[in-house]
Length: 145
Image (cartoon, rainbow, N blue to C red; front, top):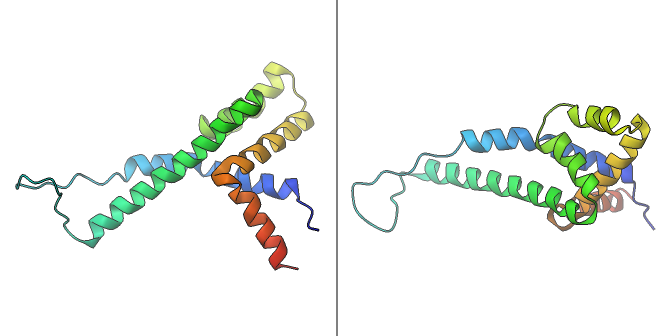
């Protein structure tokens, strides 16, 4: 039987969450301009494959952002503290302000904060795309045997 390594799964979740702010910024910047048409029709004219690819990338990026936000939001129903830890650390800021807040204002020790964050990251990994990060870890471990 394969044992699940929480540290590795938490590391994958952390890596994904660290990309959130860049994805959000890129999503806002890459919105394709609307297609201008002089004809009055219900169907927009497509200038070519490049426009379709831009729209598809923009939509895919938006879906990814929504999946991350949904997974973080779902943590709130089980453990509000973990939700606020994830949101403060990865969604609202790009630096380590979340850690400083929990260590200085609430009085967590560094090791307690790390344990709590690992649990929060595991909850995120379980809810992100129905456990995709855990499935990927499991597949990686079974393929290496």
